[in-house]
Image (tube, rainbow, N blue to C red; front, side, top):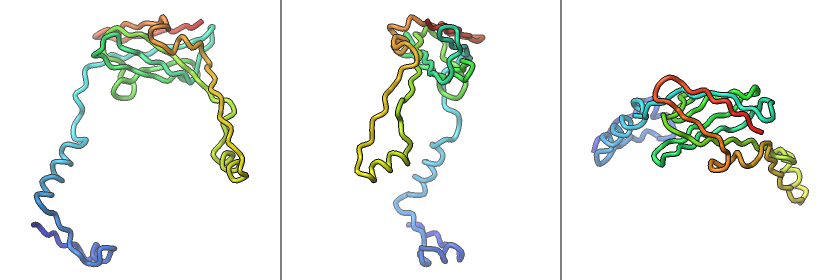
Length: 170
């Protein structure tokens, strides 16, 4: 057993002067945990930058989720959120890293909640013994674009260079 004495400053805290004890190789386990957690970059496959624009009936769509669903079972999906002008940049492993090269089906969705109450409004109703109404989910885009097999949207991400998608929904 290894005993590590506490400093005078630490001793004045909640431990009331007790020593910290590390038993049964605890220092080795602690060291291994520190080395294995978050030290170094993960070994991700290479990605290609993928960006694009999304429009519906000719108008830019902000706040929509674009997902690239890999056609191969071994692939990794890439996602993006459109800005107010309908622009997006995909992410697979890290922000804006793009997508792994390959063929993808593309899905697009945008939902909003109608009648959603704030936490304070919900609490007021509960305090009054009333039931909190459930908000209604509203699809802002045709539902077919939410499903990879029905959307009709595809993307081919090359090994090198970049891919630019223009998603014009009708």
